Length: 72
Image (tube, rainbow, N blue to C red):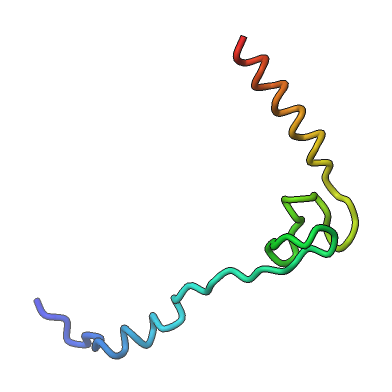
């Protein structure tokens, strides 16, 4: 059986014209100057909008202690 109302290539491609991916945009951190995604904390220093949000040094020490305990 043949599809009588078959969609053309141009209709299909027009429908898919909005499916393109966009490149990620980055902002410069106010505190350390590293690049980070907009509206997200800086993973280099742990600050957002000039305020300290995460203590990344403490997080790194906890992770190292956990790895050391798992190695035993």
